[in-house]
Length: 135
Image (cartoon, rainbow, N blue to C red; front, side, top):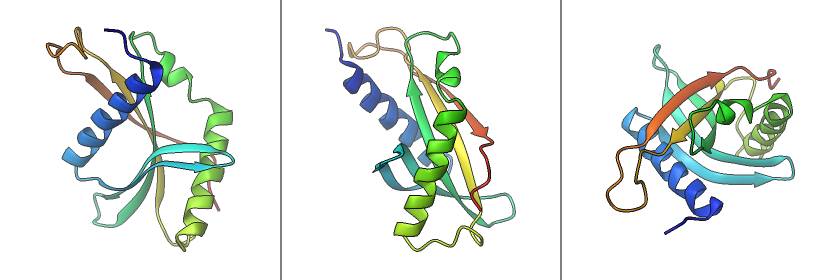
């Protein structure tokens, strides 16, 4: 059975949420839409010094390990994510000058047979990305 891009994307985002939650992320929002685009996952994570960091996370699910997921997050996408993050912070009354903020990227690569009920685990790659500053 073939899956649509939307179904594969939803599956990948669910895998990414489980991956992040297992690493201590507290997910507060998913698929936050603005006129600048959508942020797949918004979560809080405690940093090494114990401070909470607000994380804006882009998820890409790809069928091949060819780097296309990483290449799909270019400068334009980062600028739009930055603008969407500002909209989110304003709508939630979060002071961006006082709140540590981080942008991240999670790539999901399905294992063989995923979706058939006999698939192997997905491979996940998690990256911190460095967009232009918010403030």
